[in-house]
Length: 108
Image (cartoon, rainbow, N blue to C red; front, side, top):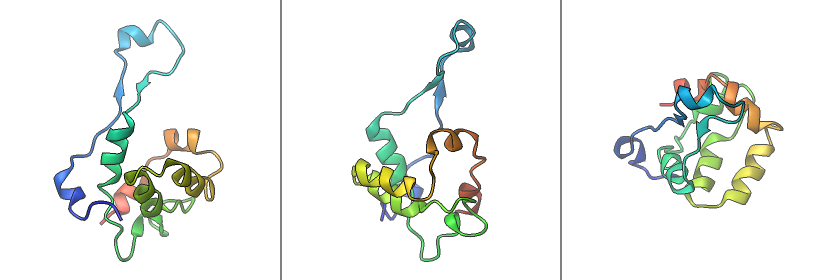
């Protein structure tokens, strides 16, 4: 489980982007990645609820095991985290970009 009080102590961070003046000059990636430490810190926000609505019918439509892989990321177990993610999602590289994140809406 992530940090029990992580949701209260750690603010949600969103990705940062290159300035538009730079983006218009290329067709490459323009989302600036978070560091591994920042991603692990964000994963600590997941409390692994008793009934995790984030991957139920009102949450993730492809049934990603969100509390499980957040815990793996929080603990720095990146290999098992990606294995867990690939067990329900064959294309996390682009579904993560277009997903409207119903898991966050379902989060208690």
